[in-house]
Image (cartoon, rainbow, N blue to C red; front, side):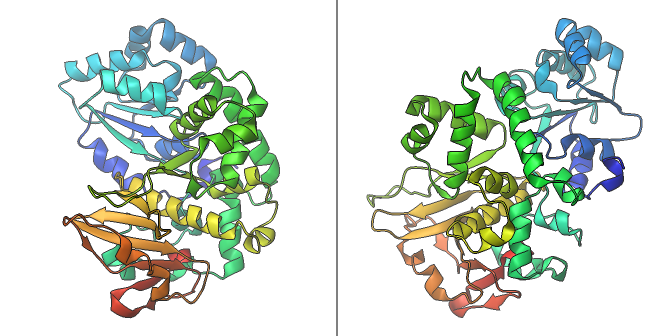
Length: 412
């Protein structure tokens, strides 16, 4: 059975069609195997030609003669894995300008953001809409009514859908499996075999293309170390020690993981204040299945009952929030808060001059005590603090005092 036969509807489909009516180029970025090619093949307009530069012969042609390649392929054209021939971006700019930036000319995808974003900045600025695709969201996996809008705290009561609700064991199975389409769509697949192959391919192809990593074993050790520290503040010296490399090398490799969509760094919230606040970002894996495999969890049941459960729940919630915005073509103003006195809030969402504090708890009985650090958040006289949300493992929404709200993690 082919990939399109097993296709899971993606929340981003409508956004791509909308962008295609306004922009000459659309670029979809994301980690390897999150479904970029399948998505574009599914929704690209009739008559659009598809080529992939994963094909060595095509990539060689595009690098040797970018103008000849683009002329031969014509428009409209979808070019997959464009990072393997970044020189064609300059040619596409010429073609777009010659056509007066006519909408719907080129769709592009790529797994590596460093070189690709540099090429976009230099060649296609103002001519391209850029969207980030991640592995399947919880709503996409469950296959219920998809929400095509970002998660907004003031509308969270409207976002609860019974399609997604489940017990704690099923929730941790979703987290442990993650959202890469292949293991989700093929339950008979051995998850350990999949992720072992994924990491090997990622290191041999994407990592080597971004930076000539001399010791692949050390790089994989750093990935494992980062996975075991998901949801924690980033400390390069800890990662360096585990990987047996220098802190400078660890920092370079973390940048590679970030550029290729494997991890995300969440910046701390701060205002112009004398209060001593955290300055270090927190590290999150963008797919919990990959994270769990790297961290050594071979079953959802072991994961559920582990000390790692809190960190992976927080990682899962972060990933689902980011996906809800990315699938709408947006990026959230999302931060975390921590001060030197120990007060901490997992996430703060900034919107329209308001701060929305959000906590993640494994408990099924949330309370306002879970938001005890909220009064410590400095506003600098600029922002209004709104009632908080506690993401929890309850199986239904729970109104809390003072306008706060317990929101089921299963419903994000």
